[in-house]
Length: 168
Image 1 (cartoon, rainbow, N blue to C red):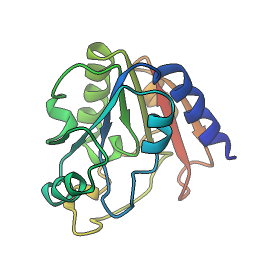
Image 2: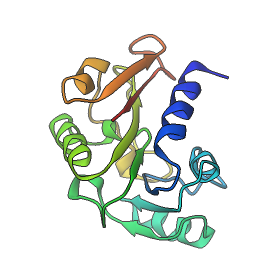
Image 3: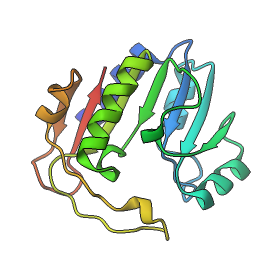
């Protein structure tokens, strides 16, 4: 098992049991979002989704894998208070200032947050017809440490498939 996966599993083991979870940013192109089964298997009482791209919202609702699928941007807030916000590979899709302010707001409003981002520069344009897939910001672990998160990088900076895992 990759070290990155072990880090995420450890955070999930600590934060998920008995909590409602909001899973931010979902791809209907996979049968189930990558981490959804892991979250459910750790005892989440319910898992909702928040997705910004309307075609994805409709496709995810049809899959029936979440309790509720909301349409909107995490930068605009969450539909309610959750025990855990899981935002995997998302901060890079917002302008840098907006992403950091959103993470600060999430930490203040919710019990726990687990997020992930590419480690350094990783250029990406629209994918699957979704203009929100463009990477508009790039981060290093110290960016997240500076706003009160724990953060660990996996892989060399500016290399494809290198990630930062952050949690609070």
